[in-house]
Image 1 (tube, rainbow, N blue to C red):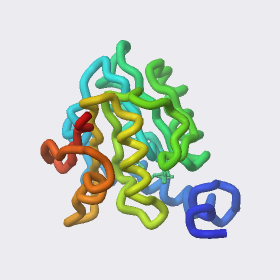
Image 2: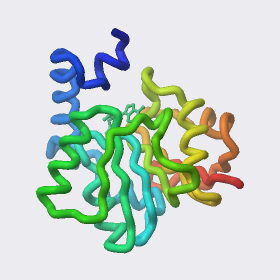
Image 3: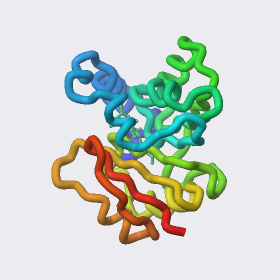
Image 4: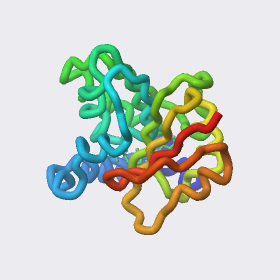
Length: 187
Ligand SMILES: C[S@@+](CC[C@H](N)C(=O)[O-])C[C@H]1O[C@@H](n2cnc3c(N)ncnc32)[C@H](O)[C@@H]1O
């Protein structure tokens, strides 16, 4: 079993233990000192009423505040490849009785969603990672966005740039706001 299956499939006890630690860290109150979800979401340009895909929702750290911005006219599809992340985010959505979020297990590199569905895709805290091919991911996100739709990427990795995304699909770089890169689907 490779690192991707070990960590992300949720099928082994060891993998689940490691992933649980990561979820706890992603959700720890001390994270709020460094990562302000409202400010980071603002950097994506998210607007009420949009249809938004969140890739790699993890513990739902961004899902809950994103659902509040989108409001009753908007819809958030929160996805993760790991079933523990899906379970954890769904638990929060149920607990808070949130109606505009659909939580789904999905592999962003071969997504089950139809083309041109989304105004915005949030890729927060997911890249770069050894288990992810930016080439595949940029092609998939390009397919999923509506024309003019935006791929918003936030990473804590210093000096990372969205060069590989732009190289592999027709995106144009708009700006970087609050640390978030925004790429627009050109056509
Ligand atoms: C470091 S966590 C970040 C979680 C969340 N976005 C946050 O910042 O709190 C990265 C997440 O990406 C998910 N992930 C990794 N590869 C994925 C893929 N191919 N499709 C969907 N999710 C993936 C992992 O399971 C993990 O939950």
